[in-house]
Amino acid sequence: MDVKPEETPAKREFLNVHTLRHQLTAPTANCPRDTYNCHGSVDDMLDTENKRLAENLATKVSRLKSLAYDIDREADDQNEYLDGMDSNFLSATGLLSGSVKRFSTMVRSGRDNRRILCYVSVGLVLAFFLLYYMVSRIQR
Image (cartoon, rainbow, N blue to C red; front, side, top):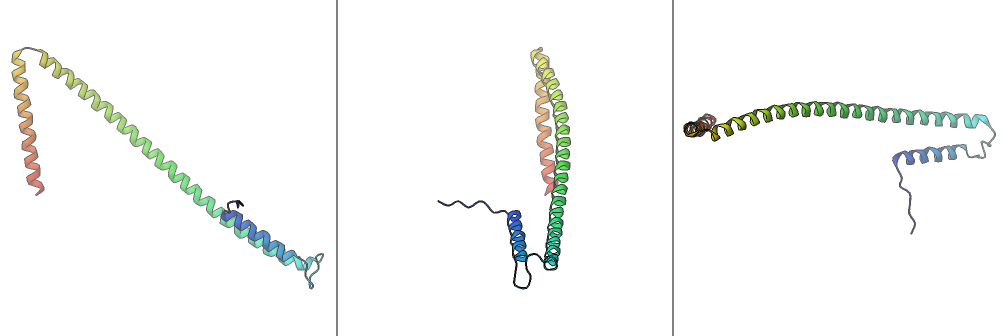
């Protein structure tokens, strides 16, 4: 089985330039190999081709640099956002743990506090449903 190496655009471009150089520098009947004048134009053409390829490469490098900068900036923004969320979750955890402690203390206390707890719980549930009803009416 014959396996061909993978041909990339850069390799294909190199092969095209190499083939062009070979074709232009080959001796012909009008231009023997030692004559400088025949090869002066070949060198100019190859130099022009090299400049074009260098500009093409510089454009690609510039594009990649810009992309890398954008990725870095986006990563910094995301890290900042996650740090803010972390502090928000920590403060919410502190509030909830304090509320749970107070609720546990109230439940463990005497019968009078349990009655107050029951009234407060029913009042909160009713307030929730009342607010839900009002918001749903406003949105229609």
